[in-house]
Structure formats: structure tokens, C-alpha cells
Amino acid sequence: MPDLINVFDFDLTATLECGQAFRWSRCGENGWHEGVVGKAVWRLRQTSDSVVEAVVPGGCGKKTLPPGTATATLMSRYLSLDRSLPQIVATFPADDQALHAAVRRHWGLRVLRQEPWECLASFIASSTKQIVQIRQIVELLARRFGEPIAPADARAGGSRRAQDWPLGKGTEWYHTFPTIEAIARATHDQLWNCKLGFRAKNLLAAARTIDSGKIDWAKITDGQNGQDARSPMDYETALAELMKLPGVGEKIANCTLLFACGFDEAFPVDVWIERALRRIYFAGKKKVTARQLREFARSHFGPYAGWAQQYLFFNERLLRKHRPRRGQTLLDVGTQ
DNA sequence: AGCCAGGCTAAGA
DNA sequence: TCTTAGCATGGC
Image (cartoon, rainbow, N blue to C red; front, side, top):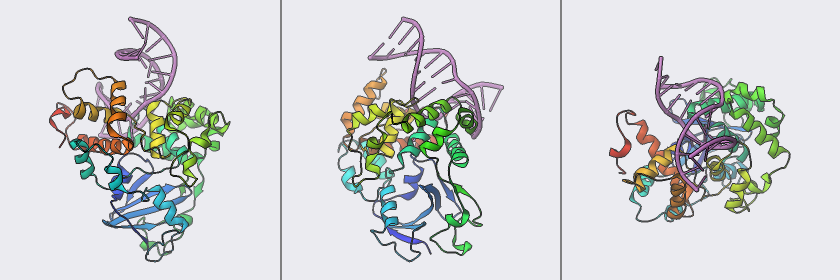
């Protein structure tokens, strides 16, 4: 039996599939999602507005996962269930109809709190790559430099009966995401062989820079392990610190701060969000520089700008996905 | 077949 | 300060 978790204002699928994490995939037909988090394999599915089923090591295999246990705390933290979505949304500009429409459409989407190094490394790998390719790279890195997780361990904590498992046979080996040290010890060619291309040298140098203590990694990511949700460092400092790493510009630094370090105001601008911003907020204006977009975002969206970004981003991607890509601009899609 | 992908960096205006 | 080319590769 899976454990049950009570949730409010939560949409598991939107949260896992909105493009912030790369190691989740659907498995089976019954809405199960499977992913490696830390040293464990998690399987999750949402069975109603208020219930998520979880098969995780450390789960008790009983009906409801008792809040306060280590596993419950970990999951609540990773999924950002320990936050009030209505309170976050209340900080958005009240008159921004396009944003509120996106929020309604994807109600329950939450920004995750991922492991910082995995997040940073994944986004270093992401530049000029499609999401399928990024997922491939991350899996290759895990397989070659991560710790193997035996099939039996992947099933730990749940039922021993294979038919209770969404996965079926349960003979597959999993791998943790490699540590900073593991990547730092790798050779350039080994990373290259993980299809990183020119990003290989950036990832290697980033790992070695962090490993040798040249940037204050511990402080940037401190909120991850401490009591507080976020790092004690201020946003601008943390951003500048991350951008010292090779291959890490504003976009990737902001992704890391938002998706892993608890900086809710971090606002990554990629091509998708740029399209959305231009269409929604700068319609009719011919020349809008990237800098203007960033400044607009900072002043317009407020302390949870990063969350607003994620709603707009996901929305934009779905718009594009459901529309023909050629011969039709997004201008006629509207903001409804 | 070609086009393009969730960028960063250096170079040159 | 803003724009542009180059970087490599696989998926569609």
C-alpha cells in the first residue's frame, strides 16, 4: 500500500512537468510519476484534489504518512507543500489578468525545492538543448557518475509484492545524480561522451571550482539544509556568486536560485518567457531589449516573481505545443 | 533535409 | 551598452 499525503492547492502533474526538473517521468497508465530524489526513488500520483499517493523509502506502508516524520518532511519540502499557494498568489499584481488566467489554468503548480547541485548542473547542460536532450544528458551523467540504486532498494518501504508497483517488473537499476566531487574527478572526455558537447568543459570547470572552494557554495545553498527555506545570502550576491562559474550566466543562475535555493524572486528569462512577456506586456512595441524585460519583471511581479514566471512559462509552452508552429504567430493566440 | 533547441562568451560596433 | 557569431548535437 502506498502512503497517503494530504495536499491543498496542489497539482502534481503540473508541478513535475512544468519544466523545472528533468528526472521525472510518467510510468504506467495510472498516473504514476517516478523520479530519483537524493538517494531514493520516489513514485507519486495524485488521486484527488487533496490526496497524493507516495511510494517512497521511509514510508510506513500504512494509510496516511504521519506528518512530521522525516520522509513526510522531506517530501513536503521538496514539493513545496509547506507553503500557502493562495498567499503567494495574493502577492501578484491584482490587475494582471493574463497572469491570473495562467494561475487559474495551472492551479496547484508549485516551484520545487530541488537539490542545488543537481539543479545547477542540469541547467548548465541545458543551454541550446531541447528538454528531451537535457533529460538524456542528465540520465547519462547519473548512470556514469552517480551511485547505483538496486531495484530492491528502489522498492524499499513499500509493498514487497511486485504487482503493487506501478513499474511492473522492478528489475531496473537507478542512479543518484552525481555529486560535485564525482563530476570534478571526471575527465573532459568522459563528460563529452555524455553528449554535453561544448558544455562539458563548463560543467567540469564548475564542479572543480565549487569543489575547491573558490565560490561560497555552502552559503548560497544554505537554506537547503537549514531550518530556513532559503539561503541567508541576499539575492544579488548569490546571483553574482553563481555567475562566476563558467557556463553560468543570468538565466542559469536564476534557475538555480529559484528551483533549488528558495529565492522566490529569481526570474529566469529564457526564450519562452521572453516570448510571453513580449506578447502580453509589450504588445505593439517593436524594440524591447532583454534588459528592459528583466527590469519590467522585477518591478512588476513582486517578491514571488519566480512563481509568476513559472505559470507564464508553462502556459506559453502549452500554447505552443497545441498550436502549429509554422505560419502562425502567437500574437493571435491572445492571453485568455 | 533542414531547422531549431529553456544560452554563454567573446568580439566588435 | 547592444548585437552578433560561434559553439556541437540530436530530435522532429
